[in-house]
Image 1 (tube, rainbow, N blue to C red):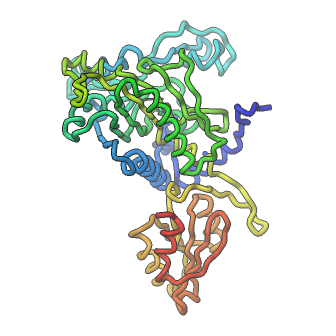
Image 2: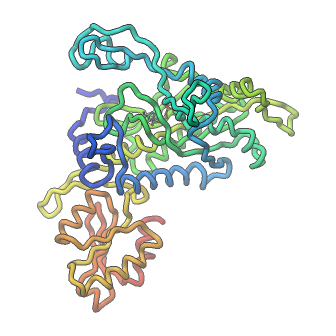
Image 3: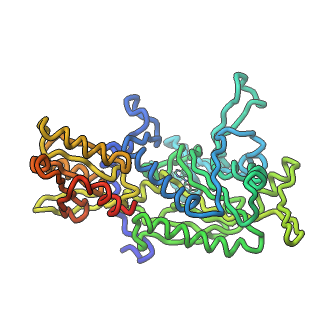
Amino acid sequence: MATPSEPAADLGLFDAVVNLCKRRGFVFPSAEIYGGIRSTYDYGPLGALMLRNIREAWWRAMIQERDDVVPLDAAILTNPKVWEASGHLATFTDPLVDCRKCKERWRADQIEDTCPNRGSNDLTEARPFNLMFKTFVGPVEDESAVAYLRPETAQGMFVNYLNIETTMRRKPPFGIAQIGRAFRNEITPGNFVFRTREFEMMELEFFVPPADSPRWQQYWCEERLSWYQRYGIAPEKLRLRPHEPEELSHYSSGTTDIEFAFPWGWGELEGIANRTDFDLRAHQDHSGTSLEHFDQATGERYLPHVVEPAAGATRTMMAFLLAAYDEDEIAGERRAVLRLHPKIAPYQVAVLPLSKKDTLSPLARDVLHRLQPHLMCEYDETQSIGRRYRRQDEIGTPFGVTVDFDSLEDQQVTVRERDSTEQTRLAIEDLVGHLLARLGA
Ligand code: GAP
């Protein structure tokens, strides 16, 4: 029996969501026609739309609705001295062991001295394996041309701290936020898009006077937890878990994870770390440029401390899908439905002419064109209306708009709501306002 703090394994749910992702165009194995490449995925049309909505929801909460955070879009390839200073070259490692029997490689901290393939204990000594992807900049492949793909977006924000403080006329407390791809040569990627070698991060570096960092860490834990709930994850599927001292990253004096009840147990969605002045001090020392803030009010100079809520966009997408997946029965027929928050769902509206007949198409397309400037819409006129409703339910579209033969006479359409399947008839003229109000847009 699972304890209250340990979710029951629900691998049926996991399989159902992975299957749906492939079947409905959310996530494909990368380069599938060549046999893929282990644990690398391409986000299909619906996945691309959903990821965009997740970024947008994060951006709204972290930047648009605040006056103390500014955005940044820093380079993925940067001067390798950044990674020397940040400690990633020396310490961003996982302990690697080889099984001498099957030759598979494992993370020593994940397998308890036994190879999961063969149950063999004939393993090599653990050795540190650096997770950064190495490449060469320019045509010559020698040591002077080595560069790394960023393993976190955070460092771009630290090395731009001074530029941003000056150009944006900011003083602590203020934050820099960034969304972007990060790369880690994970030894054991897996669990679908939970752990991949290329993934997307959404990170905030919040710079504060040193004494204020515990208060701000508490604040960001609460803010971020409520963000996941705001976009539809039930509170009982989320928890805050402070790190044990031995788990802490090399830069952190204290981290609390936001965890989600994944089908295999609790797993990290986001870490909220107190990075102290570790990074600014390291970059100040290595670059020789002072990164201290001068407080004009007190005449004090100090290196700000940093509280960092760091989330994974691709992992969050998986959590939203798992939390939204449901199966129920409508008029005696089983359906799968994604009860996604309307702002996260790939499409907000599907426009569905009752029949494919030419007589309905012009009006249905007119309805579509009225909605498109405001909402992401799909137009679908193939198959029976029942099957089209099921398809939209399964991809999480909150509203379907049906154009029927009466619509030609009365200029009205039927709006069907995904979760309740309730139908409302209303004038085409009022449709945009009606839907925007119901979507809270
Ligand atoms: N700058 C802090 C930092 O990088 P992290 O806990 O290593 O912290 C932050 O990463 C988040 O990025 C994680 O909580 C997770 O959501 C996501 N993440 C990390 N590694 C990942 C991977 N290999 N695949 C997918 N998401 C990952």
